[in-house]
Image (cartoon, rainbow, N blue to C red; front, side):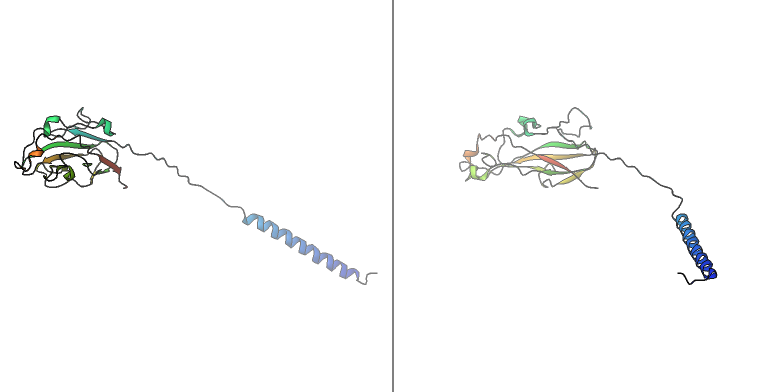
Length: 199
């Protein structure tokens, strides 16, 4: 049996009602604070890759880009051939040079390296084969006299570079070097490798 007076019971109900009302009000307040205005900004991006092509030509003067003189020569089988008479009939103490050209037909710069020449077993250029005579020499140079050997060079997009293939013979004398007469060299491959350059 309850000992609360009617007045105490009314106060309890009133307090409970106020408490519940407070909770309800707090609930409404929480709902209001989670609402917000929003806006967005979007970005989109596209990308593509460069076109890579290194061309070569044999000529005394630079061919115009796109001229028929330029060749792709992407493998050794399709190598650009230096005319056979360019280095024919060599004699002692002679220097001959043939101008070649590189054209970077790419859409980006290329670092162009010359692979080491393979001369092993060559009867004209390999010292092991010409011994005791001094061999002739062959190389790629930036000048016609064969003074400055070619070093890896960056060619800009659509840029050209003129170089020289130079053959030199030493001071062969008779009879010590008579074995160097009528000696033929097989084709010496010259491989230029173009690699992209990061901006």
